[in-house]
Image (cartoon, rainbow, N blue to C red; front, side, top):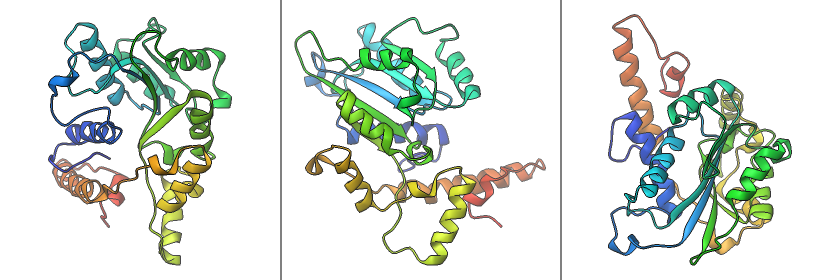
Length: 270
């Protein structure tokens, strides 16, 4: 969906959304810090649903620059490992090509798999081993953090988002950083019916649509400390700007007898 606060460009908005999530997790700073030049602390990222690899490419570039001694000093920690999972085989193939990983995984520092990210019980032994190795702590000086990343994907997990979140906390000791959707506390019956239709349209279980308070309580039930849970509402920089972008694209495409198709409804078009 993107984070449109300072841009009208879709790829830039998508990158900004990832960076906003990383900043909220205190992994990335707004500006370069001289205090980050000699850091020894590390982190690993388990990416739940990387799609066609946009965020994977961003993280791979950061990891490659780090290896070459040209790390981005906005990062609060050194990247130790990344494991990405995506369900759609077509998306996986596109991501492989974009990332230059058309052969099997050759580095334990950066691995991607085609699998159901929301169901850890379905992961192969190879995937479970990769995740386990990636999330092991440091043998060297400095501490290590594990993070689960869900960038506009958790709402789609079936039957729900909670099995993998519970697994991450219980088995991996991982924190959660995500862009996810919540609903208002006071939805009318009509609004709930519309939401149910939209959930079906977007192939998302209706049960995944919960209020912020319900979301917070489920995180506590999953084992996360209540006082450390931070949930921010960034909807003003997401939905209306995205709808405006889609309307603009629809007008541009109509000149050529084309349409943005089903996304017209997301833009509020009739």
